[in-house]
Image (cartoon, rainbow, N blue to C red; front, side, top):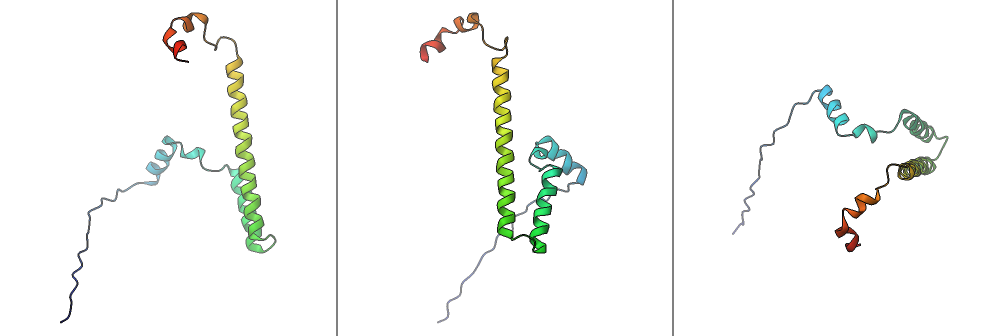
Amino acid sequence: MAKVVHLHTAHPRIPIPYVTPGEMFQGARARGASSRIPSLRKLTCYGLLGGMAVAGALEWPIAIAVGAATEVITREQAARKRAEHAEEQRRQPGTEPSARTEAAQPGQAAMA
């Protein structure tokens, strides 16, 4: 006797929104996506590395290593600048809490 397998498929209704190019860029700016897009200088550098790899002037593993090292170094430099700026802000007079503010919150001092 032959066996029969019945398969059921699901067809969910998924609405696909219509988005104009203007709305797409407006939403990207509102969400801060522009900070994740590399600068023109970085894009040029990566483009040149890719072009050299395609042309054969540079092996692709070396191009990837140079691009990754460039990204790591620039991120480290940016993090160091942010830390230095935060330290400067902390050291400026007038931004430190006063003794009166600390005395007004004795419960927090006891917990520490």
